[in-house]
Image (cartoon, rainbow, N blue to C red; front, side, top):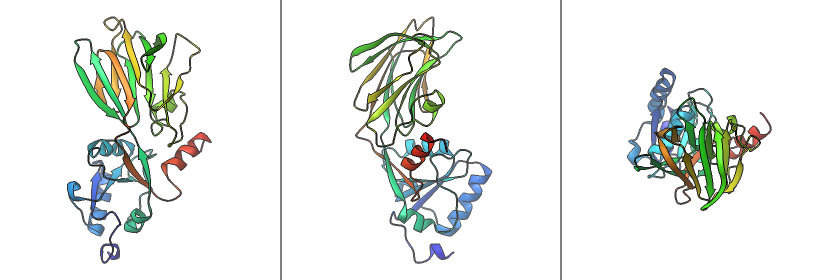
Amino acid sequence: MTDRIGKESSYGRIAFLSSGTPEADQALEALTNLYGHTDPADAGVIVALGGDGLMLQTLHRFMADKKPIYGMNRGSVGFLMNEYQENGLLERLAAAQPSIVHPLIMKATDMQGRVSTARAINEVSILRQSYQAAKMSVSIDGKERLGELVADGLLVATPAGSTAYNLSANGPILPLDAPLMALTPISAFRPRRWRGALLPDKASVSIDILEPGKRPVAAVADHFEIKDVARVEVRMDHQTGLVLLHDPGHSLDERILREQFGY
């Protein structure tokens, strides 16, 4: 109980969030007993207890509030999370290193002309909905660069998301501060040798779906999905900066660098 008495984090009051698993709920109870709990609206920092899925949900939830998020792993992979420890949390928060992440903005127009907008912290995915491969054309800053891509899908990934789905699709790992986006095909059939592109993070990507009635396609911004799309536009939102906190020596930059060397 000594951490709760006479000490305050430089971020002020703490709000704890659990992913809802038994392990995360147990951590929530233990940490609340030690440090108290503040309503997220009044907190100076959010501590997320779960895995990377909870971290993405938390970043989306508090995107407009710009509250710093400190995650502790009570999930499986936990790439975005810190190690779970009950003691010394206030000191860890005070020493934590911030990483700034900018999300993507997806504007998707479906076959009925309805327009939906969503943000993605990891990637925007264009995915086939049926047994037939998707057909797409790709334009960058209004200029067509690929007249026809036949593939299972296409990804536009942020540096923070480059180690997620993008890496599984054999896309490049990007340093967190690289002013780039990764454009990565998923199982490309034509052109067979195309492996994607690295784009400036100020570029505007437009994807037109060819034969959308015959080859239906969905667009996904992290967990937000629009089906039967006809056109998808993606750009980076430089006006929105999300703050992730990590323990010294375990920053997001360091984790991405480790991924590049396979450990």
